[in-house]
Image (cartoon, rainbow, N blue to C red; front, side):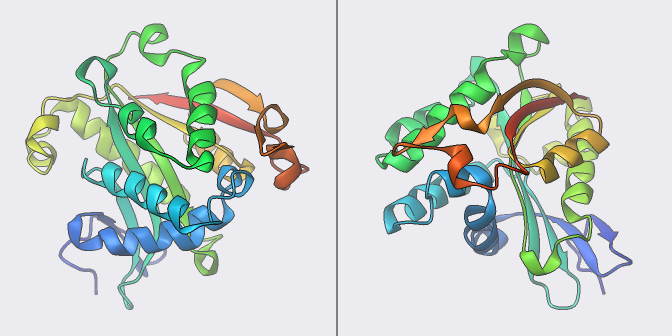
Length: 246
């Protein structure tokens, strides 16, 4: 039976989409560490699983983003295990709603490299200027536990995010009251994401995301090796910054 927190049932009723609130933070961290950090291409290229320090900085990043209260999870109805995550954040540079200051505090070479990578991929195309918008939602992390892959969970979560973001744009009172007070005046005009694999890129393509910038993984290096040398470059050749107007 679906829980009271269920937003939508998927996978023939076996999985429910839920908002990731504070009681699910630890579960989201577990999916993030065991699935995203272990298998995502930039995480692999930058050795994010190599030390306690990188784990701490990545967990700090995740928990900071979760505080916006717009992240979603896919949860098994029977076991109540969180099996996939869609982690999202409001971005509005004019209101100082960015992750720039947080990235400046990171000390590991790994996270500094990630920050430089993101600055290139996400900032080469200035979406605020080019699309004439002030606020958008950034889909930061999309990940599924390996044993639950190939069930369409990433697609379903992203599809629900689009529906939810449109309600926020319209100023839905029901949705706004769940936000932290300092975010209730934000009206997102788009959703952006940096897709680092062909799988996430296919999700974006199916849902109508527009490619704004692409860059080859061979263009980035960490400790003398290109990202292309450390990942399955034959499959995942480039990163893509994409967006969907709401």
